[in-house]
Image (cartoon, rainbow, N blue to C red):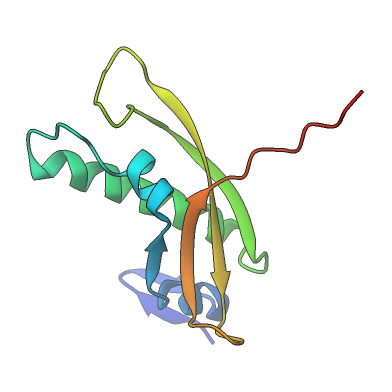
Length: 116
């Protein structure tokens, strides 16, 4: 059975994920949301909203996967508009088996470089 969220019907997996608290690792928060020189709170709100929207979009596309990768273009934390960056992130959801259910947003780990 689907739950209604706004005007959208959610399947049980999506509704469960949407009910989880969202947690950022400190590193992900600094790079995805924080601005060192934010002139207005709205700048941080925009960054937070776009990060959450991208995370939910990725998770809802593969709700049975515990970890999904996503990314977005970001100004660096110093706000320099001439140096936009691509930020690789991950969203993982844990259902409380030994831990609190949460949606965790973190930086995507760097791939391991294999020696030639």
